[in-house]
Length: 115
Length: 111
Image (cartoon, rainbow over all chains, first blue to last red; front, side):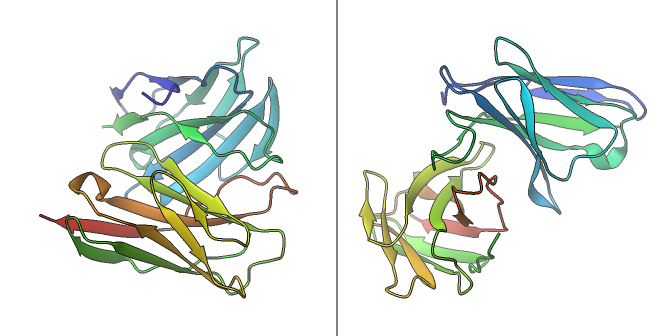
């Protein structure tokens, strides 16, 4: 157990639908990062939050959004789902904003299947 | 972020040492070299990182070339549990940039 909790572990939904993925960071960590891993794209950085504020954006589609709540858990919302959104979605956390060279702790991921 | 180059795949016999190479010829003076690995069906996990000097921890050793244009992750005795994809990543903490994962090296450990 890495200390980063992601729910649900598996999700199957239809095209056009909307889903929410949840992440609880490791205790004491203030930064949350979302990554997408599909077979042909590898691990792609989506977005980072630090202490409730959006810190950085990567290759995140406009149909996707995220937020970090006061208790520091984060949610990734995926809407108007397409078949190509099927992937593993990982959440990672770190104690700092990214400037202190601490590593990331990853969760075990949510496997999303869009049918 | 500066790019790294790793072999797509490598094989090792169980209980033998494994040397996983990484080339990073465009590394800047403030880039740290990080290694993560991803076991099947799991999220990536931190292995080791360093700047200039060789580093050791309970999981592995990191040997960094004197010119820093390449590095080698050393697993001293490969076990079946070490079969994973290993990622070599450069990151400058001063910029606060995220970790960008490439395609990594898929390590197969042969019993």
